[in-house]
Amino acid sequence: IDKKILKQVLRNNCIKYSESNFNILQKWILFSFISLYDGVSILEVKNLALYISKNMYLFCNSNDEQFHKQLGELVDHKHLYTDGDALRVTHDSDYIDYVDIYENSLIKKIFSKHVYEFLLSEETIYNRDELICKHSRIAEIPDWQKINFEYGKHLYEQKKFYEAHKLFMNIYDRSYNLGEQNYLLIALNEYENGYYNTCLSILEKIDLNNSEDSFDKFSYFFNYGKCIYNNNGKIDLALEKLNESLNYVNKNDERYYIVQNYLHMLLIEIPGGYKKSKTIFYEIKDECEHKFPIIWANTMRGCHNFIADSDEAINILNRAEKILLNPLEKWYIKNTEGFINIRNGNLDNALKIFKDSYDNIRKI
Image (cartoon, rainbow, N blue to C red; front, side, top):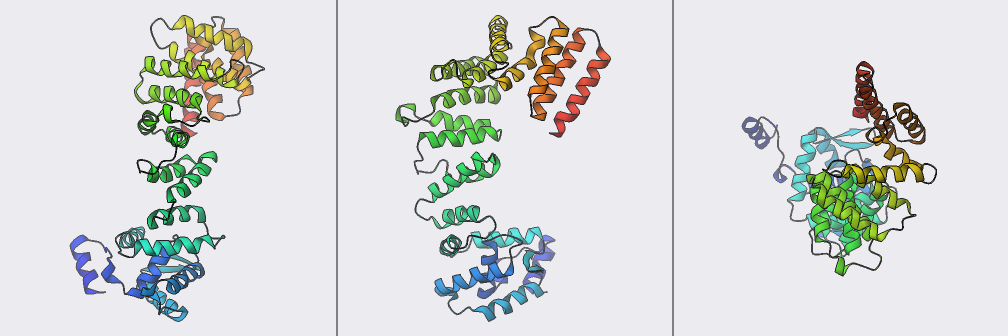
């Protein structure tokens, strides 16, 4: 074992690699590997490495023969290992060390620039779009923020909210102006991830006076209200924003009833709000079962608060459950049956319903 590495083991009880542990050609291979991903094919690493050697003076004397020779040494010393035709790290901690070496390297920016250019012409590499975003950011390619935002938007539309979050947070708070509508989209993505504090922070910075004509004010106020409630429970302020959203939607629109459903759920929580909540509940009950069945079914989840006749309430819940496709929403409906059983004195049955609901909701 190398003396430097032995000293590190004795001092830290583990091996921590640094740039000095590798010669220039080994770094050429390691950086090419790190620039792609763990498990990448050896051929793809070699193709990138040879592309780098043609475009970076530091590696201009590198060639196919040297690639295989130096790769063999990295494998022999267990810095990397081959898994069929794939290249992998021996330990996760090694991968972290290699990334740190790359991140702290003076050539990181120019290396990533060439990786970015290489990826533009290689359409079959796994996670290509994500890698393009990463290396455009590291290399500070012109309009890298736009490149990252557009892919983040694509991920948002696919409901891959956490993946989109990682891209958006690299852009947010930079000097690059994305426009108010795009900042709204980033806020909505943070809401979907449950990052309500960040969502509120972004919404608070959106300047409505500077917004585009196409700016979605309904979505802005509606989600602002929801986020306020979920973040700090300030119902009065949440109600103010939700009511404001109604100014930007037609009463015949599905979104009108989405807001109304949310309003009725909040109003029942505040003193003096029950009567208005009940009025909204019956408006949705009477008008939406066939017009907007999903909204109707989710609103009926609260029927035990307003319908005294237990048979009528159970009948409504059964109809609602048949409409809903989302398993989570179905179990919320079942959970409401528990409250009706409590009201009727069927405590054992209520307990069973609550337990079944809890066990199934927890799994989803």
